[in-house]
Image: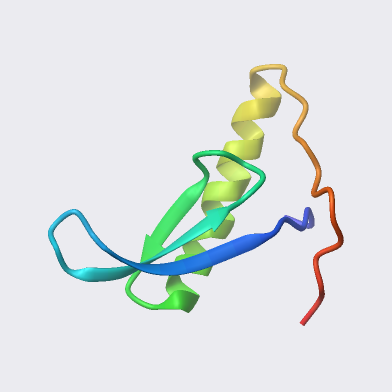
Length: 73
């Protein structure tokens, strides 16, 4: 997906108490994913972001684009 959003990754405890990384899209409330590593969390977030935006479109909601430029690596 070519839409660029600000993403954050934090180390948190999973529901079973083990440490895991949580990646979130700040501008898409509730759009998050988990992984054992930061990279896995970000990879999983790409799928979550795509499904989140597809669901919005299906529901007739126009996705909000990133309001500030996201730096490219």
